[in-house]
Image 1 (cartoon, rainbow, N blue to C red):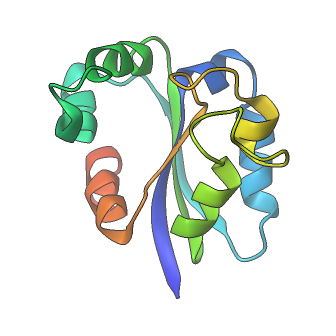
Image 2: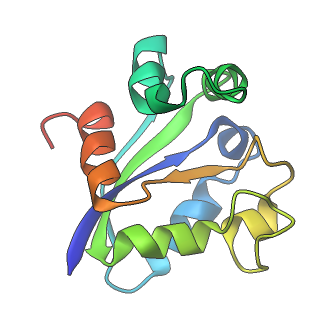
Image 3: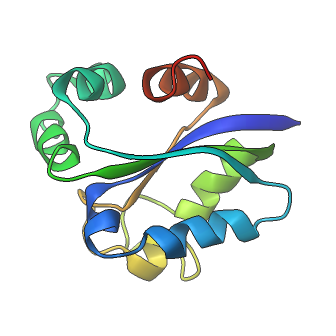
Amino acid sequence: MSQRTLVLLKPDAVRRGLIGEIIGRIERKAGWRITALELRDLDQDTLEQHYGEHRGKPFYEPLVAFMSSGPVVALVVEGERVIEGVRTLAGPTDPIAAAPGSIRGDYGTIVRENLIHASDSEESAARELKIFFPGR
């Protein structure tokens, strides 16, 4: 079943020069296509819409501060089981727990700065795509 998902390359991925490496891994996956891509700075409104469900949790403020610390690359990726697939490619949030070969396993350093966001369900993907790519 073909799906669409939001992928964000977070400020640490951009700062560390990993955009090409991560995008290359997505592009090399047979059947997946990047259908939109934009380098952008995230404003407070966008961050509140995206992470609003976490407001009040201890990690919310540091997360918003990190995500506004530099530009991100926002992508729409389409393909067969792409939601599950990109999350597997990304690996677990904790880089120590992430398997070698995953993005976080190969390049992750700390839990809070974990290189990549990928929607976790079809519902999340639909909601997040409307925030980052309205009208697409």
